Length: 180
Image (cartoon, rainbow, N blue to C red):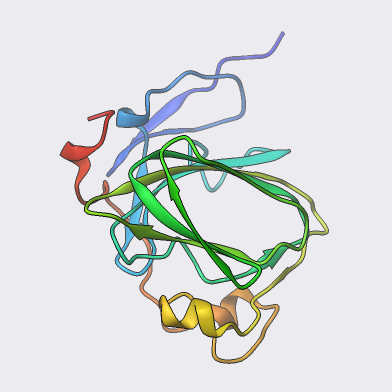
C-alpha cells in the first residue's frame, strides 16, 4: 500500500516532505514568486519532485511572461483557469481565456504572457524525462513581450542569467483569485 506523504510548513505554505499520496488545497500550498515570471504553486517539494509528471499553477499579471520562450523535448499541456493571457507559440500569438486548453507536442516553441485587466492562472502539466532537452531560440515576437533571449542557448543557466531569483511568497492579486 502507498503511504500518505507528510507535509511541512514553509514560509509560503505547505509542501510535501516525502513521497506518497496526498491531498492539499491550492490556497494552502507553498508558492514562489518572481517579479520577472509571476508566482508558482508547484504542489511538489524541490527536494522530493514528482517522478513522471510535473504540475504547477502559474499566476501572471498583465504583461508578465511565465518564463522565457523555449521548446522542450517532453510534451506539455496547459489549461487557463482564470483570467486572460497570450500564448506565443511557434512565432504566432493567440489570445486565451478561462478554460482554453493548449497541447504542446515535444519541441514546440512557446511561452505565456499575462493579458487582460487582472491576474491570469494557468495549470501547467509536463512529462518528466531524465534525458529531456530544452532550447531557448531567438524570437522577435517573444522579445517584444519581454520573454525572449538575445542569443539561442540550450542552457537554462545561461538563458536566465541575471534574472530575479524566486522567493517564497503568494501571488500578487491573491484576493482576486477564485481560491482565496
